[in-house]
Length: 102
Image 1: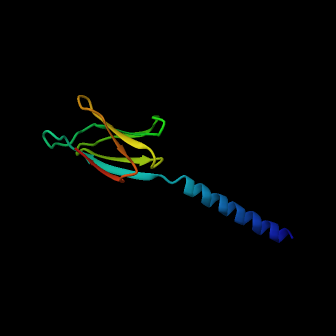
Image 2: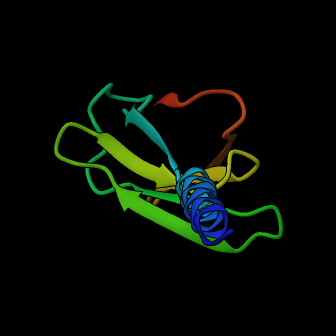
Image 3: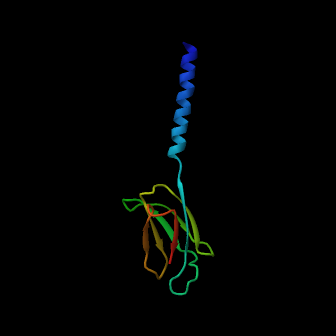
């Protein structure tokens, strides 16, 4: 009887750990942002993940090549691209995991 309880306990712990690992997984979104006027990379552009209720969940800045990498929490969220002097653009995360914004 004790052996059976021990086996059930170990299996239960393994199951709980597996569930926690699956729930903790995040997706990675990457992309490149270039200016539509002069085709140069937009350095320091803000990329923000916003939830469905418009809360900021995470964010990143573009590097010297206009590239960004962002770990996202939920594919139902949206990405907002903003830069001083430019109109912000919002993209759905459901459409892709790779973005090229002009």
